[in-house]
Length: 108
Length: 120
Image (cartoon, rainbow over all chains, first blue to last red; front, side, top):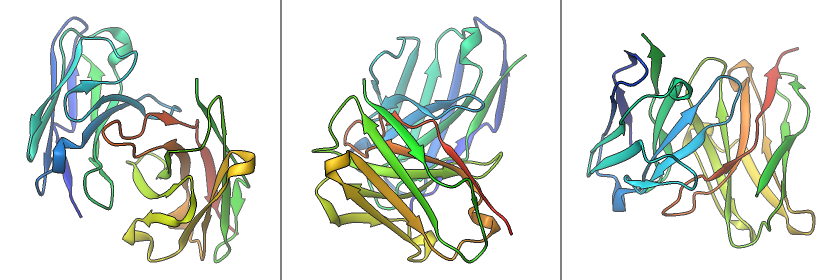
């Protein structure tokens, strides 16, 4: 299976700062079928980015995704208070679908 | 707006079968893939499997479950279901249903989740 390794495990930043989260795959993610999700406590994951770089419906443009092959990133250009959450990457190009272990974005 | 809602028992005894249903409203179950994803308390996400709306022959499951998972669809009720046999404490988790994978959009709508505890 495709193992996804996210870094860092925890990122502590202040509102207004820029956040960059990373996701590395153990093998090439076909057709860049790489997604990013945001999850807050007690809630379901929310799709932010699909196809490595396309924003899902209703997602603010401060969220952007990039990368290809095995290395991907999610950038939040200017952190808002509601952005502090856990972020997961996911690949859906090969079976089984797999998720990274998550990056926790904390308020500094 | 598509809405998904999980239902089923919140407590299952060890060695028994976990059964959950996801009801889809605000849209048709047709032409989509539908998945189950679980999350043990305080841990990450694990994909369980998917089923196509047309029925049981177009399914895929996570090998980690060693053949214990089975999904089905009831198109007349706009529902899909999960059965997980021979459960243990390791199957205690928040179970989500979701629409997808839908390349390129992946999983775009999710249920709120159903906590299932395996305990005697």
